[in-house]
Length: 262
Length: 271
Figure 1 (cartoon, rainbow over the protein chains, first blue to last red):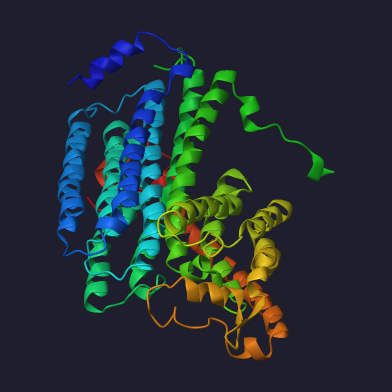
Figure 2 (figure 1 turned 90 degrees about the vertical axis):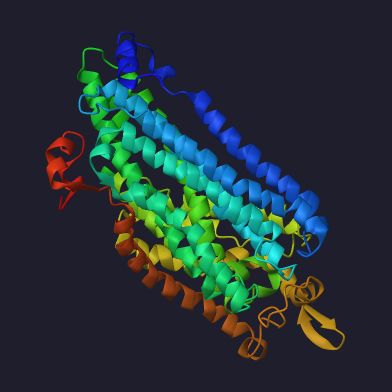
């Protein structure tokens, strides 16, 4: 792996225009990965949910739906673990003397990670969660692993968890303030939605053993509501970002390199 | 008059490059804000007011005008707090309702209609944006959250019924259904069966609404107005928590972090 510090020193030697500050290709790559996965599952649901997914005791269900579950959980978390390890392994071990230009560029990268996390969070918390209501209002469940749940709980939630933790680790390993203290809003904005997945355990226990059936606003579901509130702590991250980047811009204007960012 | 004085934006005091960098930050953060609000606001709303928002037959004249605006008030107030207090941007409520509308419409089309085959005119989302516009406009004009709670939240609660009236009115037309007086929405509900729990196997409107009728339907928005006014105070108070920009720092790390954050952002904890 390239040494972060030596790369930084090498790039400091040349000034580049601020217009090339953002590595847009990585943002596009991240959004594309999320989009491909999420749209594939929506297509799969359209093709096979009502034809092969209504009876969990039928062999077709074990051909078209359960294999997805067996692949996606280890696959998504396995890929996530590799990503998290790579972010940690390539951490910057010298954050005390970061030039403002470098730190500002890292803030841009950090925001791109958050964009991918937010986009994945939209798919999981908004699109597929309300879509679950559509499924449960036409089909009485005979399993906890419905076609809607296999997509929603065990694919879309892990995807945003992976990118959320990656964002947190990125900040922890690349930004000075985040490496020396725990950002309360960032931690809450990641941990809250993350905890929605364990809360699925409570939800499915209730549906299986208390036969709640499918009133969507039943109190059993309110754990999801309160955990979702934590995501709004992104507002605190915004304040942290504006405070720090304002200082960085002032420092960059004063520095000899001016506003040429590397 | 001071009201009409134009202050130069902060970016005008920066160099051109600094202004561009500042706007780059904005360009990157708005998608984060939009998608996070869509995800979190939508999951909050769908699991508290969802059934009243999903189905036309649940859009009655008693509970729908109360539950939906009251439950939908939390996120706009919290976002207004952050965007106004720190940035003087009067966009909090409108941004939230736009995000909610986007999230709801995406699933009503691709989930309820395209996948589960419910007709679009049975599962359309409630109209909340006019109330949000008023909430933001009152905050912008008064520059005072207390006045916004009194007048803005009141108007937000009152206008919900009026804003949705053109859409819901056709579905409240009476139908003689095999000798029973039903609304068109009730007939829709009988034809598009939801899972058979008592809450779905019923006529949503009953009791005094079917007997007293008109006057009760007018009283409901005023009750909503009152509840929204009280709720605004509560959520504005709670909003401080969501905008906290603090770092918890071990005592030994405090000197190291002081270079990078403002003093009030440091919350020292035991090592």
